[in-house]
Image (cartoon, rainbow, N blue to C red; front, side):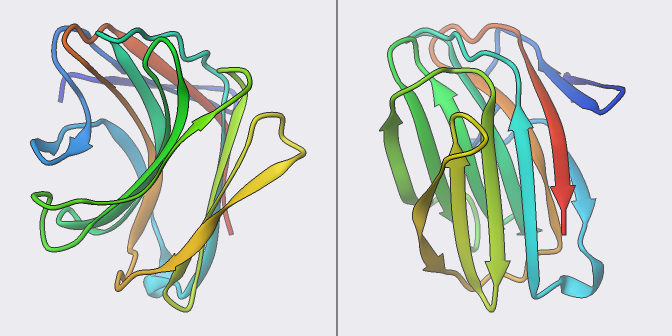
Length: 178
């Protein structure tokens, strides 16, 4: 990969270079990520992260930071914040038996700041729940959805896209799994 990673104190930084898109979509799983294994195919878990990098993209330069939960590279779930120069969005998609036909589960415009964004994914009994916060205290729940995934890894990813993707560094703190 062409990305770089750094840890300073309790902050994780993932830098994606410009000039080429880095994403999790039908054209590939090219977004750099830092993953952690889940013990014994955990049936119940929670993964949360606070993103501190302001999202300041444009229509030609879309910035993305989020959580990815994998069964394997063909069966996964992504939940992320993105910014296209005019709208902050929460985007959730599931991939089953390959990347060719993603299921978009949410693609909502959010009102509020573009930095200090919190994202939480919980899973129990095959049902996934996504929560997000724009301030760390008030949480919004995205309706839960059952999915046939046996998650083995979960982590943080960063990406860029659009016609002219620029270098982007995603900074995350408070990365926690229970």
